[in-house]
Image (spheres, rainbow over the protein chains, first blue to last red):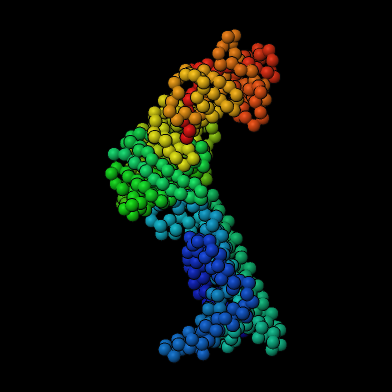
Length: 222
Length: 354
């Protein structure tokens, strides 16, 4: 059995989760301070990928990144960078699809954050970045953690946009989910079942890890 | 050296106009009902909120000047705020909450200073506990230790006891006083509880509907209030519109259809008459300011009876006259539905509006 799809899936999910972690937190923090109307509009735009079908997201991404499109074409001509049909294309797809999960959970956590804590920190002479990273983030860690795990799980299971952007090239862009589809399509049910079991195992492990993590944290900080 | 505040801040349909000075080593009370702009005033001084205009000065340093465009960030104002809920960082222990404000010191000095502050506020036993494991009083002391660590030049106390049970208050007040007595700079004590500020502050500035009145001696304010808002805050239950009567020493209360004899001379701008509920009493024979009333309601309080009276011949919409009476005096009344009430001329307070 060729393990490349597993390696590739985890690689894509890990890289996109790191990106989405910072992008989501930044967006949530930035948008919290905006006027209400702007906030409402941006909120809709940033949450859209969550409700749009992944194929629509994939189509829109191709519109920007495709080799005959402005951005994708320019990067290909100027730097020889190909944005589609590579494993990195899978990262683009995963980021676009899992970003709203991180953004929304982080925003919810930030909104329930007691603002007097930040105000107190400022009157005590603490810098704004210290307050954000050392007080607000730890206090909101449950929501942040939940968002990160959801984003990771979503990236791991991403199929629609990935298949459009990265396609299915065995040994290059194949992921667990595209492999399962490919195996089913070509009638290799036994092999497909193995990958399904692998997928189930990873998902269960991730959820278990989160539960253990939360229980341990609960003891340290009541 | 002092904290001088003169600010205007408009929000919604509300205008805050605060003007007062707190001297070094003084605890100035900022007294007012909830929603009168007390918290906004504190936030403006601390730099969390921004006034529309005016000037805030501390120790001769300008913290805010609307005209000159100066608005120091909270970090540079050196104003300590004791928040209503204490705002302790829940992810840090008592020790860390204090040490975090000592970033300017090196590790050894920081440890030493933290130890000193924890000892000063008797928190050595709670050093490694998290805020949620502390009692209300311990939380308050932790917040104070943390503020003192930042070495502020002025202290702002935002309703320091509103989060605590009342039976704990008195002892904690003593503890807070001990800390404040040692604090060299000005202290602003915000509260809606007149008893609390009476016990702890010598001077008071009353904030009513967003406007501050000139700071006054607390005792004077309580004994002889000049304005309606001060009278209400001093515990005066009855305040009714008044106009000059047909002769000197007479005041007319249109709401009650009464003309009453006053002892104090008519003051310019008098608009209200204040009568403390415990000064209303059943008339003695021949008493001058006596008038028959119906008892609308009577309620038994811990130490006295509280009766709501309506002078006879007065419509439903008129304000009620409240009377506080000792329980035995109430029991001795011949009729609990109808009373001949009276107020001595020297107990009538002539008040200005606002």
